[in-house]
Image 1 (cartoon, rainbow, N blue to C red):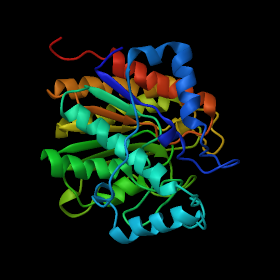
Image 2 (spheres, helix red, strand yellow; image 1 turned 90 degrees about the vertical axis):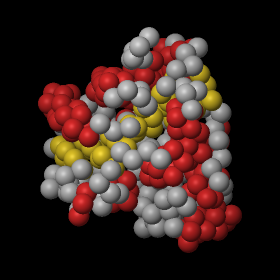
Image 3 (tube, helix red, strand yellow; image 1 turned 135 degrees about the vertical axis):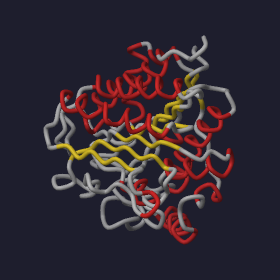
Length: 320
């Protein structure tokens, strides 16, 4: 067991899913964890139980009206929480709040030195906006973590890096005018894939202009394209020297996903996690929180997320 890396596993986050036939099913966590056990990666980490977020945590990013809406629809399980992608189900509030609570607990453990790095597989719900759901995402745990790091720990400059096939629009537009949120997102071009955003000229607004890097890639982009563009992300982060790094490592950018057109391999995900750990160590803090994000091919989920966790484990800790 490596106490330097915490991984969150439990039925409370596994329940975050939308039923039989929906791409975001409730079997996704198990697909990862079974592969982690098969590879032996599960033996290299400290396994933590999911944690329930409080309503006040959710309202660090989301409007009170929206949180109340989710509570109401969670009791009946009726209707959609957006325009048709994200159905309500009985208990959706509790499931989504466990996703948030687990990412917040991981953040606290990193900040308090109880672990150096962490991975939450059912997390990285990057499409949820402040006042609505979107793209299978009810509460935006990444957006909430950013707000919590500011409020609870007084951090200023935080980096959010996203290699999911879909643009992280909920995080981007939630912090589009925030000059201290360093945003770097490599994704399938919005002309071909939901949510249709994340164009290269979207670099932030007002005082935040130039603090956001969107790298839209053509469908069928492979590892060659990934590695050609990854250096731009490293250069971008090095210019900002963030105090905490969040990685959204959606496995839907791996070849063979049923709803996207990207052709990365799990090596891209492992490389991203490894390099972000090295950068965080070079900045003097080592803080990296990885979230699973999307991914709808179960084999890809297992391989890509195991590559991420293996990198979190293998990356050296500065001074040791």
